[in-house]
Image (cartoon, rainbow, N blue to C red; front, top):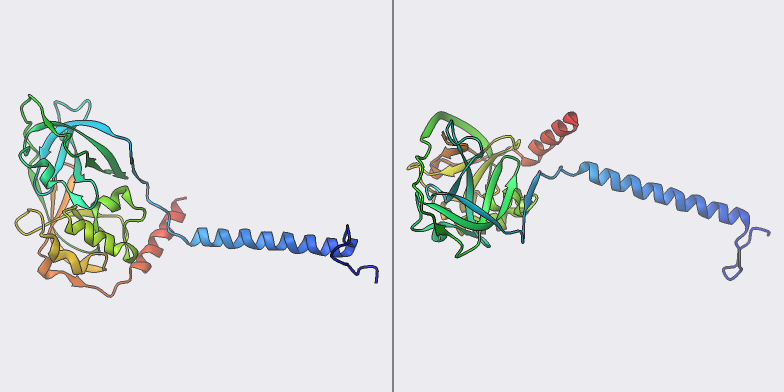
Length: 266
């Protein structure tokens, strides 16, 4: 009866105290193991960011087609090669920047905005009313190169969330948000299932695609065939939405493959 323990006693018997300590340690280790298993099973987050509340000043040339873009001169490349970085432009909220850049196409401007970026792609959320024309001549814009036809499988995402406002900004869980952003004029991007390729989507006439025709395909695995175009550092995919086809390929399988490659790189 020496190990009998009454709860109001000041100290537990040695054997009971030892047993309780072991149980607590085992439960702690089990909790850590479960947490590690859950973390390991998650997809790694993309290297992306939205500099919310950090207003910056930019100078460049507005290229309004197919989607509003700011051409910013790269330091040290004024006299050679493709000398501009191309930053997609959007308005605050779930809206494109067409109405903000109206009348500024091909004009050198100053503007304020917040950076959104993911890996090698950059976007600016413009501060409304901040665009002002500069007294300088516009530079010659890079021509559009035709790189040939391609067939790819992936999903359509809205560029604003995908590039940094949301992380992740793709997949079924993000479908409603992406559909609303694209309907509001945010440029649509096609991302291959393995995440290695992404293209700005344009229509058969190389202009912006009407948002409503993409609605049923947003965040769905689809297969498309199109023509790859390059303007400066921007790659576009000229497509006809009437030829889009849903596919039985599972996004989850592609994500698993991508996760495996990430582990191998580490």
